[in-house]
Image (cartoon, rainbow, N blue to C red; front, side):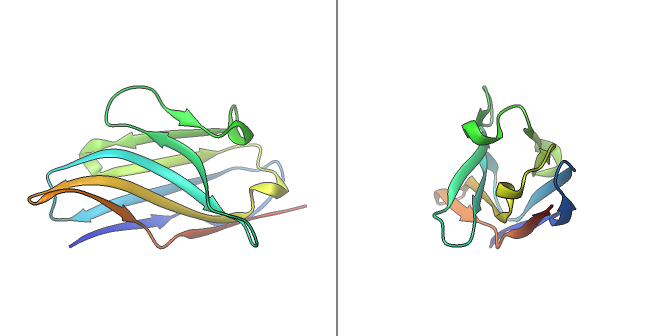
Length: 119
């Protein structure tokens, strides 16, 4: 079985910073793209940032210049550094990954971590 576990969420004042982590565990051979999504109350889930196994990163326009996605392949972990947080960044943040297992490529989701930005 493969699990993605997010951590690092919490309550922060507007203008502050948080760093989210998502670690993959279980039996697998390789991780392709790793992506952060978020879902605010009453809204659809949206892509925040993505990082492939190789190549350039991708960001939602709303977070460009404030958020940075990175990964540590040795630790099977993806990070999201969030700076200059705004009230509208409040959401549950989910980790998503495409992971190669013996039987093929599968897509996995974490359970999410709450980020609340206060004024």
